[in-house]
Image 1 (tube, helix red, strand yellow):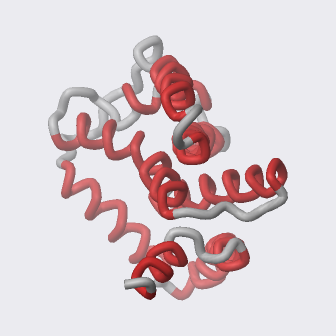
Image 2 (tube, rainbow, N blue to C red):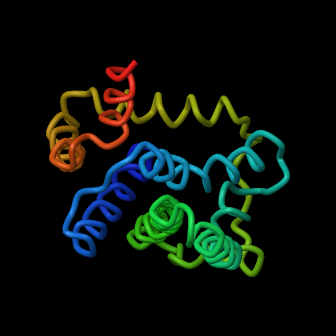
Length: 190
């Protein structure tokens, strides 16, 4: 899943869950920041350790492991329970949604179990072909995505691909644009 896919998935889960529990849209810059950080953290940690520092053969290791994510999430929920509960819940839900998203995307791949990406160090994925570098891999991901999506034969796929993001954006606007609205109000009160 691309970074923006993880962000969209995490935001939708948090927004709909928050609305279900409180009957109100999510609010506050801290909650939105927690969702952004939580949804990106596993890739930032593991891809850096793999592609940048070459400590692991794959970009699915420590931060993608449920053996690490569950205790870390529970610790964060405990620490934030009294002072910033919504931020803690947003972060943990976003972090765990990243893992669920990666597991779901492994389902259609042959020879890959959804748990393979989530069970480090019990399961270690085979190394990448070649010697990936951090910036080389980032460039490859984005250039491949945009080069393939901008061809005529992929135009329909691109249109279908953008619909969920437009729906997430619409949900964010309906929620009152949390994060941006907070910054806007703060700027107008100066």
